[in-house]
Amino acid sequence: MLFEVWAPEAGQVVLCAEGRTRAMERDPGRAGWWRCEAPAAGGTRYGFALDGGPVLPDPRSRRQPDGPDGLSAVVDFAAFPEPEEWPGLPLPGAVLYELHIGTFTREGTFDAAAGRLPHLADLGVTHVELMPVCPFPGTHGWGYEGVAPWAVHEPYGGPAGLRRFVDAAHRHGLGVVLDVVHNHLGPSGNHLPAFGPYFTDTHHTPWGAAVNLDAPGSDEVRAYLTGSALAWLRDYGLDGLRLDAVHALADTRTPHFLAELSAAVDGLGARLGRPLFLIAESDLNDPVTTAPREAGGHGTHAQWNDDFHHALHAALTGESQGYYGDFAADPAYALTKTLTGGFFHDGTLSSFRGRPHGRPLERGTVPAYRLLGYAQNHDQIGNRALGDRLSARLSPGLLACAAALVLCGPFTPMLFMGEEWGARTPWQFFTDHTDPQLAEAVRTGRRREFAAHGWAAADIPDPQDPATRDRSCLDWTEPARAPHTELLAWHRRLIALRRDEPALARAPLAATDVSVAGDLTTVLRRGPLCVAVNPTGAPAALPVGAAEVLAAWRPVDPPGADGVLRLAPESAAVLRYGRPRPPSRRGEAGETPGTGVSVPR
Image (cartoon, rainbow, N blue to C red; front, side, top):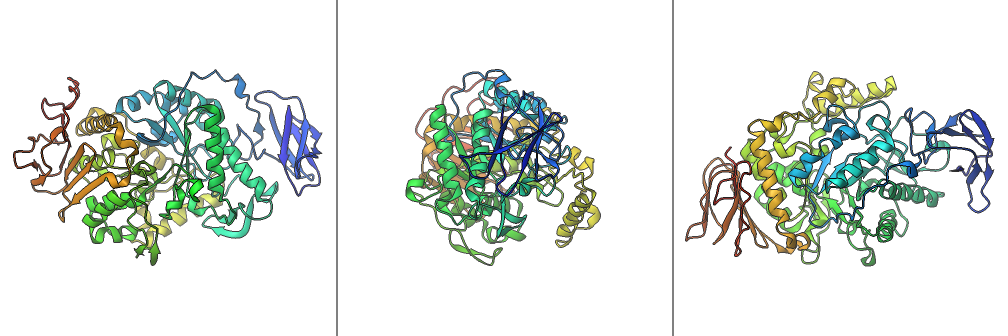
C-alpha cells in the first residue's frame, strides 16, 4: 500500500505501521510530499514521525480508533457492502432536518439514529443534515471542536457506521447532508501544525490563527480541504455539505476558496451523475456567496438565513436583546422584509454590529430556495444560557404558526430534531474534554459569558457534566402524547402540501407576496398557496380572497363571499387558489373532512 504525507519543512519522515518503521522518500513530482510502500490492510494502525519526533496521526487519516491523539487506521472502502443505486436528491424542493448523532437517540450512535429513519421518512422531510462527525476529544460534544477532517468520530460508529447510516437513509428515500468545519480545528488533538503551514498568523479568527488559505503553502492547504469535502461526498455517498461559518474563511486569493470548492463539487456531481450541493453558513448577508461563479460569485448552492430566524423569533417571543434588537423594533416590518427580500440587513444599519451590514439580493432573479428558512437550529437553541427551545416559551398554537411560515414559506425549510413534535427537552452546550485545564477553561468561560447578561453562575449548565448531554437527548415517548401528537400531524400535513406544489421550488423571491399587520397577523401568498397566520390572543379576520382551506391548526370555515378568513387566536391555515385539492387521505391523525388537517390546540 502507498503511504503519503505532506511535510514540506521536515528533513526526515518515518512511517510507523504495526510497530515497524520504514523511512519515507521525497516525492520527486510533488514538492513537500513524502511517500513509501508498505504492507497494510483495513485496520492497520500507523502514524508518521518527523525528524525523530513522536509518532503522529496522519493528517488525512480516515479513522482514529483511539481518538485524535492515537494512531490512524487504514480504511478499506472497497470492503464495505456495495450501496444500492441512488439517483440523488437535488436541493430545490428539499425539506431539511438537522440532527446531532450524539443526542438524536440516547445511545448516540449512527446505528441507533438509523433506527429512527422511518419516523423521518413518514414526516416527509427529504434530507437529513448531520452535525459534524469528525473526531473530537472524549465521547460527547457538538462536533465543532473536531480535528482530523477526513475521519469519523469513533464513538458514533466510525467510518463503517456512517456508511451504514447513509445507505439506510437512501433506502428510506432520504438524502444526507453533512456539516463540515473548514474555518478552524479544535484546541485539543490538532497535530496539523507539526506537518506544515496549515495555519497562518496573517489573519486571526475567534479561534486563533486562521486556516492558511492565502499565505505561502496555501495551495496544499486548499487542496487538503477540498479533497476532504470530495471524499465525504464520494466515499460515503453523501448528497451535500453544510459549510460552517464561511465568513471566518480568511482568503484574499482569486478565485476565493469557496469558488474553487463549489467548482470541484459540481465536477464530482457531473462525474457521479447525481446532484451534489453546498450550503454555506454565512454571517455576511452577501449575495456573492450563492451567486454563480460565472457571475463572479462563489457558487455555493444555498446559505442559511439567520435574518428570517431573527425576525420570526422576535415576532413570536417578543425578545429584543442582542441581535434581536433591530428585528424587535418593528417586528411586522422585519417579518415582511425577510419573507419578501431574504435579508433584513441589506446595507442597513445593524445596531448590534454598530455599522451598516449586508447587501440586497436580486429578488427577481434569485430563487428563494437558495436561502434556508428555520424557526430553530442548533446554534439558536444551544447558544442560549439554558438551551431552551421555542416550546419552553410558546404555546402549541404559536409553534404551529411558526411551522406554517417555515414549511410553506418561500425558503428551503429546515427543522431541528424534535421540533416537529414540539420537543420539551433542551439542547444545551456540552463537551467531554479530556484535558482538565481545557475543561475548566470551557466551564469558566461559559459561566463568565452569561454572567455578563445577568445569569447566576449556578444556573448555567456545566458543559462537562454528563447530565448536560443527557438532558439534551430527545425523548421519543413525547410524540405519543398531547400536544406533541397534534404538532407532529400538523408538520406532516404542511410538508405534504409543500411537496404537492413542486413548481414553487424554483420560484424567485419576487414570487412571494406578504401582508403583515401591526398585530403580526400575516397573509403570505406564493403561487397557488396562501398561508394565513394569527399569532395574537384574539380572533382575526384576514382578507385572503376566494380560496379553499387545505389545512388548519384549529377548525376554520372557508372564506365567505367577502373573501375574509376568520381565524381563531394563535392559529394558522393554508389555502389554495383556483384549483381543486386532491382527495384527502382518510385516517390521517386529526383530519377533518372539508378542512384538510384540523388540529385543535
